[in-house]
Amino acid sequence: MNSSPIKYTLLGIFIGIFVVGVLFGVFLLGKSSQSSVDARLQAAVTTPAAAATSSNANTASTTDIKSADVSSSSIPVPPKLSNAEVAQKQQENKSQLAQASQILSNKNIIAKVKPSVVYIENSDGSSGSGFIISTDGYIMTNAHVVTGFDTTNITLSSGAEYVGNIVGRNEKVDVAIVKIDATNLQPASLGNSDQVQQGDDVFAFGYPFGISGDVDFKNGTVSRWQMIDGTNYIEISAQIEHGNSGGPLVNNQGKVVGINEFLIDPNSVSGIELGESLKFAMPINTAKALISALENGEDIRLPTAQQTNNASCQATYGQYSQWSGQTGSNGSPTCICQTGYSWDGTGNSCALNSTLQQQCVSEFGTGSYSLTQGGKAVCDCRIGYVWNSAQTQCVYQYSSSPSYTPPPTPTPVDDTQFPYGSTITIPLSLTMQIGNNPHQTCDQLGVTANELTLCNLYRNYHDNYSWNIDQSQ
Image 1 (cartoon, rainbow, N blue to C red):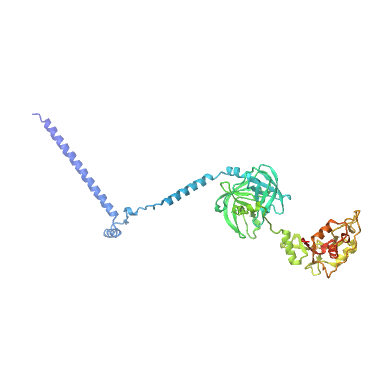
Image 2 (image 1 turned 120 degrees about the vertical axis):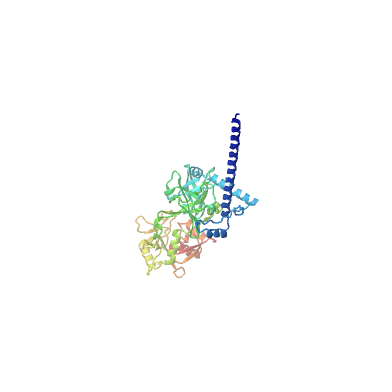
């Protein structure tokens, strides 16, 4: 009997049982592992009190497992925005993108601004900068650039030259408008200085040290807003020098946000060592508010140094003193006496010195009078008289005229009626009659008795008095 089929059948049954056993074992192992994992997870979410109890019960464990709330309520959910808020966010993003797209490279800023910058030079050689604000030739600058002048010379960046008329100025704010006879000019784009912030990029244009030629360009940042004497200025790190005054300060979009105005030199701050000068610009919004008035002829001027110092001298030494043009070591004005006056005996005021006046008349004739020059009393010729060729006599100015009549000795002055140094009122018509007929004496003018006295005083003793011209007569 052949036993092979039976053996193979038994072997197959055995193998099948073995495979089933293995699979069952794997199943049981998986179930056990899952139970272990579930137990660990359960331990992980145990409350703090339970965890503490478990830790105390198992003194061999050194691991302090902290509770973790894994509930869905612990996951932060952003608040839902309203439609209006969503629209606002979108608008802000668009605005930021638009601003970013307007930022220019230095090369493009120069190309945009340079054609608008001008070089300003006055007749005395002083100079500054400015910038065009209209196509028909209006130019903005600092008032101090053109102080004391009614016209100035303008050179465009292209090299074209013009004579400019100062049509308006406000020296209190330090802004002026100059007009040139030109058209089709490229004006600068004026920005909004209220938007200028600390750290912003800024760029200064102009002609430092009065050096003409190509326009100078310096870049920097806004250092801070600074209040000086009640006025707000933009302090900048961009280097500016004397001559940059009046030039534009622009932002990274090439828009004018300020006017380069002044700097504080390192040595000008007493007791402080500065590494570099402090540079300041006027906010353009301050200047923009004045454009219309200035273009229409507004003329606001500060007292000149001569006027200010004359007032100081007269307050100290009387109305007949004046500033000499010099200042003392302490910075105060040096005062002298006006023409026809000299220091009194005390040296504290200026007064007419009748003794010196008589000496001048005795030595140089009735056409001379006494005055003070360089602190010394000297003699000179009165109005209507000139020195003769030998410089020994004051002779009548029109003695060569065919109708010349030698002037009589001036009528003596009644000191009681007309004290020296007093103010006399005289009709405008009489002063014109005197001025238009210099070759005639007062008697020959055919004036009234009262006018004859005034004519004598005005023509022969003019500098001994102050005159009030009555324009109504």
